Amino acid sequence: MVPTPDVIRHFHPVLPARSLGKKPVRVEVAGRAYALFRDASGKPAALADACPHRFAPLSKGQVRADGRLQCPYHGWRFDAEGRGANPSQPELRHCDASSFQVVERHDYLWLAERDTPLSAMPDMEVDADEYVYGGAFSQVFEAPLHVSLDNFSEDEHTPYVHTRLGWDDPRADQVEFEAHNFDDRTEVHYRAPQRAAPLMKLLGVRDGDFFQNDWVTRFDPVRSQYTVSWVSPTGKQRPFITRANIFFVPETATTTRLHAFSFLKCVVPAMRPLLPVAARAAAALTWWEVRDDARFIPTVADTPYSHKGMRLDKYDKPLVHQRRLMERIYYRTGPSVASVPLAREASSG
Image (cartoon, rainbow, N blue to C red; front, top):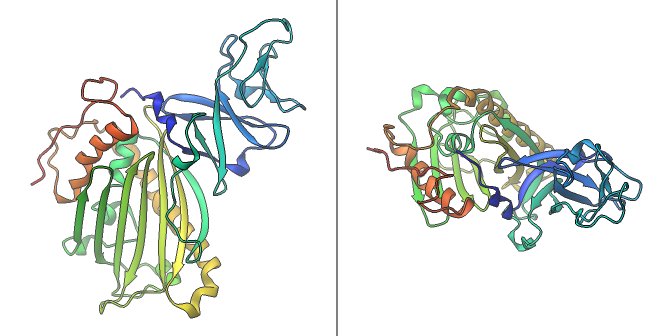
């Protein structure tokens, strides 16, 4: 699959803000490289990571005292808007580099084209009066975007890839499942007996409780919001509800970087003072779960883009529809565009 550069019209999280200091940093999105740096005022900026002179990587250069990024090869220097100058031939014109928009939000740097409006910034959909931010992290998946997304679009693998959240193998036939396909998203619901996991007790989960995972997947950019909660056998809501927003950023044709933002809500007023500590515990739990997937994903990294020939079951209902949404909304391609192979309907019964 050949990545489509146009995806940068969407805002993508690309780097924790704390990771960008005095030196430039290279990031990749859909096969294109960008040099991130901070100007003299400390504001983040981004240029195409190729000097317009002879394409040397600007990310290997240095930030001058005046805040301009200097090419490591011949010293050309560029401001945050991409305006360039050649020190060896000051009169030379047309030395500019392509520049991009960088927004610092949620302790992260978000990259988009210059003309992408701020209103296009993805909404985390968390009420600040209810949810406490537990932290963010990123994880590299050694697999293409479509493989990484498919993995996070079903929980059927839970007993076999994960060890904490969700159910185990003896309860694999006790899962309640719903999936709904819409013109711009998919919505999925799982409910099953929570397996025994001591770490869950930190979130008030007891033996015999039911695990519930409800999520929405959107494609502006590719992202899923997972809301996980637990209820007692009688239906009583347990104290904490976790919400994780996971962004799937294709770096190359064979790697995807997941950026996760974790939040926690408490429905028991007396326990709300514990939210800051519990929110960090929930973020750590999310990290462990994503790491489980990252360790397994190379095993299936060569899975073809098309689902043709696969014996899909009911839990795979969102997968084929999501291919279409990814092509139409994220890549903005049609059936005749060969750069993004079309997913074909596979058997699901």
